[in-house]
Length: 350
Ligand code: NCD
Ligand code: ZN
Image 1 (tube, rainbow, N blue to C red):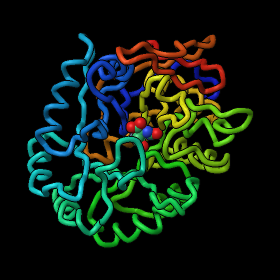
Image 2: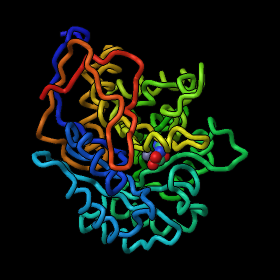
Image 3: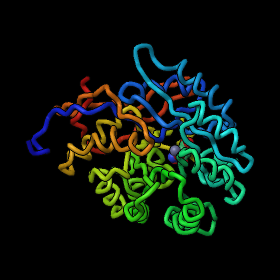
Image 4: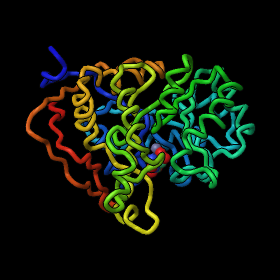
């Protein structure tokens, strides 16, 4: 049946390869929004203080597991926050013990809670060498932080100035360029045939920079990397729906309370956990490629990480528009759910 006539789709249960769960009351409120549909997620370590050591990752994993709603089955795949004083042997041990799946590289100052990130890449070279040896992926926030570089160019400049040289020095290192937002990143990944993949968020498939800035400023569309012009969004959609195994879902669902978003200096982050599968189905269906949703959300990610795809499935059904709450309630205050700006016809029915 042509993709456009499909009204029901059963796919392997999806995974989220880039997720912010926070901690405490926020964790309790946002986790069920993910476990409802997702089996696993790569958990970002940018807590305050960050999750740097294997011991901290293990303790955080326990707090997440304690917050999983009864009846849901969910595996958090933990990451370690790379600092210039990270001990390579601690990383090796965390990987061997199954405590950490990947290491996260934040250039210092690039985004929310990234102050302890990396300034001098030579200082983390011993860690990267160990990771290449043991096959542990590096998840990269790919933006330079120099104030002189225009915020819309920071990803493209990072590829040339940081990522290419780094991958030359450690070619055996598996790298995930996270939340890519540009044609430049898509081209770089497509042209590279080994040890490189990219995640794409739900919101970057839907919004461009006009959504943030035209007709009044929309803080709920502000995230990092910031959404780029329309041609870049189109390139992301093409990559996502192509079935190319190097591209997979990482929602970067990043909850901040409304008071923290709606202020003179508002936080970066968009919360998409609640309606991500409906949004993605709409994007893939609009492109005539709903049949590729499973590759993007459920198959390509585990393949890159060397994990089996999930045995369980979910079923999406197309019908009358489905509505989601405008915000979820948390112990820290309301968190606004991403508004894609169009009707969503697909819902997860079982
Ligand atoms: C993330 C956050 O809030 O932790 N924010 C965001 O805009 N994506 C950090 C990040 O992934 O850059
Ligand atoms: Zn993120």
